Amino acid sequence: MRGRKTVFALALVSAMSSSAFARDGNLDKGFFDGGRQYVPMSAPFGGALGSGYGVLQSDGSVVVAGSSDLGGGGVQPDVHVRRLSAAGMLDMNYGGTGETVVAFDRGGNNADYVSGMAIQNNGRVLVSGVSDGNNVNATGADCFVFRLTTNGALDPQFSTDGKAVIGFDYGPPTQQGDLCSGLVLQQDQQILVYGATTVPAGNAVAMAIARLDSSGSPDLGFNNTGKRMLSFGAGDIGSLAYKAVESPDHGILLVGIAATAAGYDWGIAKLSVDGSDFPGFGSGGRVRFHAGVAGGTQEAAGAVLALPDNSFIVAGQAQGAAGSGTNFAVAKFHADGSVDTGFGIGGKRVIAFDYGGDNNESANSLALDSQGRILVGGQVNVGPSNSDFIVVRLLADGSLDPSFGTAGRINVELAAPPLVDTDETSNSLLLAPDGGIVIVGSGRNQQDSNHPSIGVAKLIGDTVFENDFESE
Image (cartoon, rainbow, N blue to C red; front, side, top):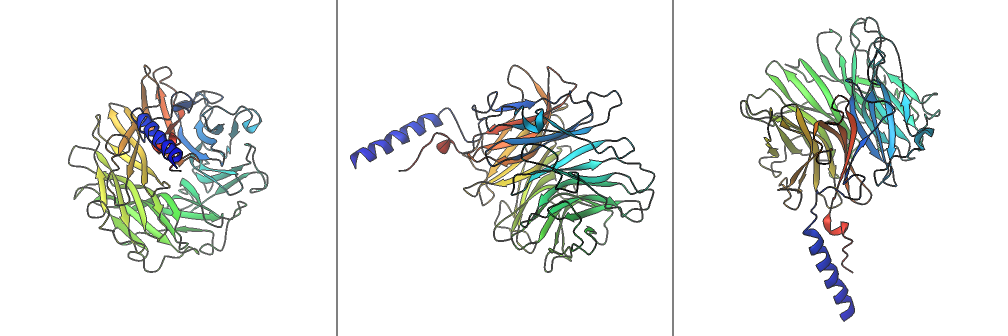
């Protein structure tokens, strides 16, 4: 018994000693270059970049995707996919050459831009985006999805050649431009693709969503057509879905913006599994929410997280005081769409970082860790033409977690000193099998400031477990 107590005491001393040098939210020094990695492509990114996105495979490997125009010269962007090991090293066997390049080249500018990623239960990776077309007829910009095998090859079992194109096409024949913001998997592995479409009148855009079965074919059981356009009712002059998720009750939550003549609000919609409006949610299946100051016009919801009791959390940006830019904002809602006033302050937590520049801050990713803490990712302006990744951790009640970073927040620079980085934008916040926090986005550094790269950083999620502290 005495021996066990001694081991326990030594472990406690070791954990306390290590915590003096490491803290939840610190860069994980075991991941590549001190916790960060710029991911090179076969040719440098030029000016047209679809910001980096990522997914985690079961072994902790990180698959990332971005769009590169191969340095310009009239060659338009294609999609580039690479894989990193759990330690951040490039897998030179992925796709056969270390990189998979996918092009749709449907006409127009032949530009293909990444907008999201997901991973199926079988480990196959899905990538979504927008594919350009000829904008004077019905082959204008459409959504795309392609699927890769676990080793990075296009999967011929998905939509015959591994690639699917989805046109919402609600606009008039000469204005059928669609936007794809991302994709998400339902519990049954069916694929939801969402974004916006030109409305039939051709003067505005509206939220739109389509569903594919797990093999990439349109699911005509969804709204009888496989797709749906959504309205926010009276005063609606435009809307756009930035993120979607399926809730445990099989409802489909979409969040983004809902515009009125006065400006943008958070737009939240909930659909039933068949694509109809979810009964009992908000007003006709819709909720408008204003997170910032009264009269603010720059509101947008950028992420949504469904909780086991069908309540949900939304994160995005909120209008700050006049001249102060936008702030991080997180709010919690009951299953019926009403605000949970027990969360944060009156149902929301608004955080102003105000590090410099135009002080614009926005959240676009959410995750729930194993201890029920809420992780929020995004970017924060830190000076003229300069932004960093930022991660905030909240406790279940919406309060900032003091054990994480500095007062619950940490901003992440991709370039290791003495290099200086700029224009960092994060898109994906992932929880690694070892409890670490992986952030994927894009950024530049002073060595090659003209060409953005996909950037990946890994943070320590829990210092105690990082140091192998156990209670027995």
